[in-house]
Length: 155
Image (cartoon, rainbow, N blue to C red):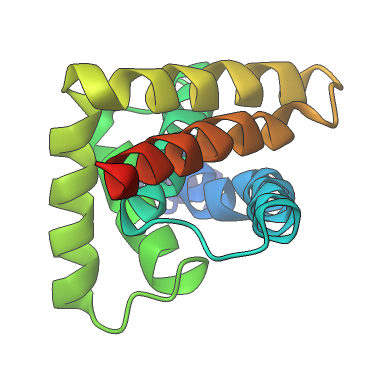
């Protein structure tokens, strides 16, 4: 029986790891979302619409860093982020989650998205080694978004 369970009963270790990633990244995202609340309270109004994309790209950067550290591939990373879009970020449907995922991937590859992506990745790397305020760096990105929006509204 030991031989057969070894050959046929082996569970895919990669799929077990993939299943754990949302619980591993969850506290980081929760802390980053506190930065959103802090910026909204500090500025006295809600964030500009394009800040929602900054938040998602930052989270994607954090997730990508975690997946690389766990030696998961890009396909796993994308599948996990789509799941997070539906659970943590409450995308109303799988279709909307897929649309958001494609948008985040597209923006992450652009110059404008690189800052949020790399800040998210570095923040998560720092979070993993004990820098518990690292996710709050999202606040600096969002405050910059607010300044840009204010300048756009003046002109």
